[in-house]
Length: 67
Image 1 (spheres, rainbow, N blue to C red):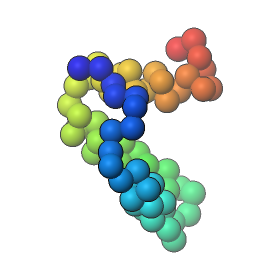
Image 2 (tube, one colour; image 1 turned 60 degrees about the horizontal axis):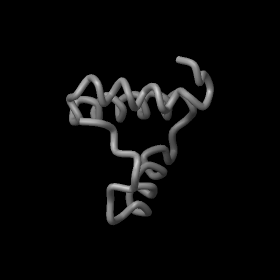
Image 3 (cartoon, rainbow, N blue to C red; image 1 turned 90 degrees about the horizontal axis):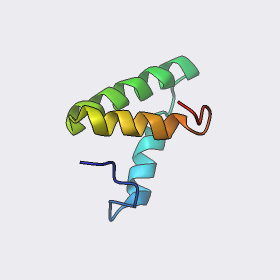
């Protein structure tokens, strides 16, 4: 299974709103912890180490393209 990079939802605005609301009222440290927890929850849901590694590589590529 490879990572889906095309839009894979019928409600992208709802997803965006949920992600923004997740951070309301939190300071920077709390937001970082919530992001980490969200990543771990979604990684567990995906369950495929190759897909998770691919997502991590793509997410980081904007800052360290050769990793």
